[in-house]
Image 1 (tube, rainbow, N blue to C red):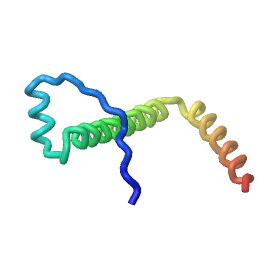
Image 2 (image 1 turned 45 degrees about the horizontal axis):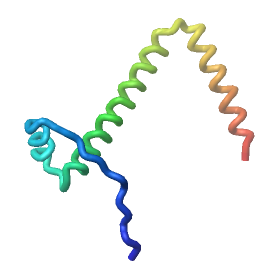
Image 3 (image 1 turned 30 degrees about the vertical axis):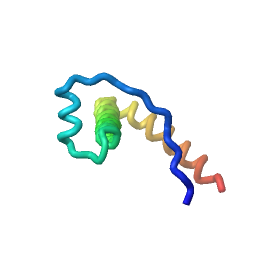
Image 4 (image 1 turned 90 degrees about the vertical axis):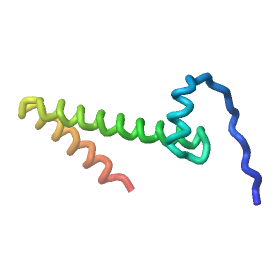
Length: 83
C-alpha cells in the first residue's frame, strides 16, 4: 500500500456561525464539506454560463446564427478528417 501524501494546507479564520454551518452540513471533515460545496458551486456556475450562452445565441438574428452554424460545420469537417 502506497502511503497517501498530504497536500500543503493552511488555516482560515471563520466566524463561529460559518463554522457551525459547515459542521451542520455533515461531511466527514470540514475540508470534505467545503470541497463538496465548491464543486457544487462550480457546477452551477458552469451551467449558468452555458444557459447565458444559449440565450445569447438565441437572441442573434437568423443570419448571424447561420454564420455560426456554418463555422461550426467547417470545424467539424476538419476534425472528421483527422484520424
